Image: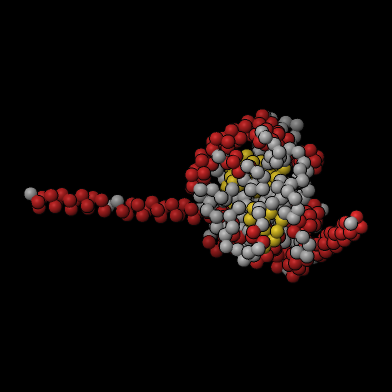
Length: 442
C-alpha cells in the first residue's frame, strides 16, 4: 500500500512538472513573439492540455505559471489599455474594467505576474484568519458541455500570516510615511500594473464570525485597493445567514469601524465591498440594498449558485457545491435599481466574451470579473473580452466604458415610467363619461 502511494505521488509530481513546463513553454513562445494570445492556436492548445489533469491540479499549475509572470501573450498590444476603458472608482483609477475574480489566486501568489494577462485588477482570497485545508478532495468538477464548474473548496487558504508576508514587500511600498498612497495603476515604477482586491472570510469552526472579519480588515487594509466581505459562499456552513438584515448590519458596521480605525492616516482608505449570493428573493435583496446603502461602498454580484438550472452534464451536476459559468449569467441583478445606482457594482458570473461583459455593465456594473471562463479559454480570455468590448463600444458610440454603466436598466425604468404616463389621461376621460352618464340619468 505504501509503495502504491509513493508511486502515485511520484507520477502526479511528474505530471505537475510536465504540465507546468508545457504551460510555461507555450507562454514563453507567445510572449517572445508578442503574439495576440486570444487568436493564436498555441495559446488555445494550452487549455486542452491542462484538462488532462484533475481540475485542482490544473488550477495549481496555472497559479504557479502566473506567479512567475508566464502568461500567454503578455506583450500583446491588447494587454495594454486605452483611455476608453479607464475609469475612476472609489478615488482610484482602474486601467480597464476586466479583472480576475476571487478563488483563482487564494493566497496572493500571482501578484504581480497575473497582471501580464492585461487584467485591470486581481482579487485574491478568500482569506481567513487561520490557515485551513478546506473540504475533502475531490472538490472541483468541470462541466465541459456547459462550460461551467462546480466547486466546494471551502475557503482553503494559507491564512492571514502567510498572505501578509507575501504581500508586504509588494504592496506596502505604495504607502509613504505620511500614510499617503504613492502609486497608481498608471505608475509602472511601483511594479504593479493594476489594482488589488482582498477577499475576506471566516474560518469554518469560528463561532464569532464578526471577529474573524474584523481581524482580516485590520491586517489587510493597508495592502488593499478594495476589501471584500464574503458572506455568500455556499461551501462554508451557515455563512449565508450573515446576509440577513440584522446580522449583516452588525457585521458591516463592525468592519467599517475597523477599517476606519486602521486608516486614520491614509490618504485614500480602501472601500468595503459586499459579495452576495445569486440565490436571493426580492425581499432579501431589498434588505441587503438597504444595509449596503448605509454601510457598504460597493457590491459584487454574485457568488456561485446552489441552484441547478438545466445542464448537459447531468451526472456531474449532482455534485454538491457552488455552480459557476454561463448558467449564472442570467441571474437577476436588480441591485442597481434597488440602490438607485449609488453603490458601484462588480459584475461576476458567466462572462466569457465582450458581449457578456457589456451586458453586465449596461445592466449596472462598473467592473466585471472572470474566473470560470479562464478554465475553458485560458487567461487570454481577458484580452479577448477587452478587444470585443472596445469594438462594441465603438459601434454603439460610447467614448468611455463609464458612459455605458446602467444604460439598459435606466432605459427600462424610463420605459416603465412612460407607460404609466400614457395610462394617466385615461382616468380623466372615465370621470368625464361618468359625469355625462349622471346627467343623462337626471
